Image 1 (spheres, helix red, strand yellow):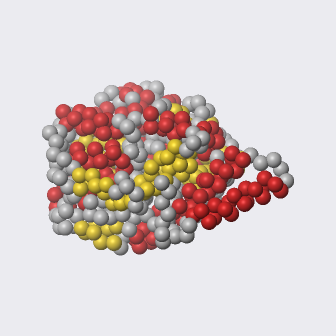
Image 2: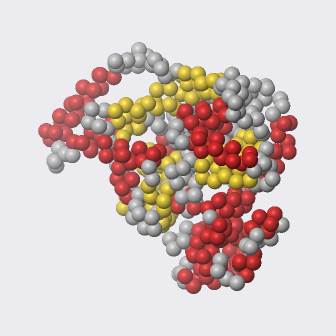
Image 3: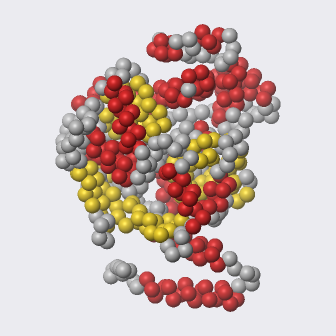
Length: 502
């Protein structure tokens, strides 16, 4: 049944105008009309006018969308939406070509292979960005505050598993990086927590940075793993039957009671915010990092008669303390995806005061504000950026070259021992500079800038070597331990109990 909101005008009034425009186009337009594309464009525009997350899925897109949760695919690795006609990045998928190239939440892809991507169909986006592992695609990025720039991305296998990496940072601290919330996320996380506990873990750092979300039920199940009371974990409010719900925790034999610190940033959205917000509100965990994205709208997917579908926002998410997760979008969709980096604007959002279970003050207004702000203030030189973004993957090639040199096997003979003794600071900066110039003599770099950024570059090289010798686990371990936000977050386990007190 179609419900008409009495506070608004009758929607059928304008439908007469739409029918009239269709007739006029059909009778008078100078060229033949692709009516499927034209009507789909009108549907997209109508849904885009509602909010940033209501969307249309064509019949051709269905298998591709399903693949993102169930299958295996190869491409560049971004969660995106079509906003104001542009491919807009919600978050890069960690560990993928887009993430490694430094693509950020809010970036717009305005060209693909030097052809305009403005108002491109979603199915065409996926056709052009997906492709066999090892092939390349050139994208032009539009980012607020800088000139448009080009990046060449080498496609790779995109991880479908939710759990990207997991290991013990030290004797008692476990680290788990969740990449997305899909069908198996809860089981993956639970199994890995059990595994880490067997190794001696007594406290957990849960990394949700750049996790664009996914399935709400998985977020609720994960929260229930850490909450043994009957507290509210999440509630939704909508206007139609079944859209307003309250999700409560229940006591289980496998509940976990160890300290939890959650890391978030601007790319943490939806299900990530549900987990971070509830752990914070119920004083069950400390949230560190940067303010999250602010996606708190619930969509329901309706299949249409022609096999396409519409995702319509039917409700809004609220954390246990009553905070609305959704960030305002009344200034337009363009600002919605760029203003997340505006510190002054973000501060203005943090004006709604709410209280945790223990009476601590937390702030609403959209997104989750961490208990402690830890910014990733990494500023790299132009030379370093040129190397990292190079189409020939120069860091990977350099790591491959030096890993076979005589001194490397000795340095890596006992990774854990060497790591604990901090003996893994390999200094190959001068060699890297000459290697880069030899591989691309037209690249504008200076060795002094490479020396300045050597701590970061050396860490990337070290991670690539470790990946080649022992596997992806060690790549992520080195990358994590070189990350300033993770290093700072670890120190707060010493203050954990005090931080949860009013």
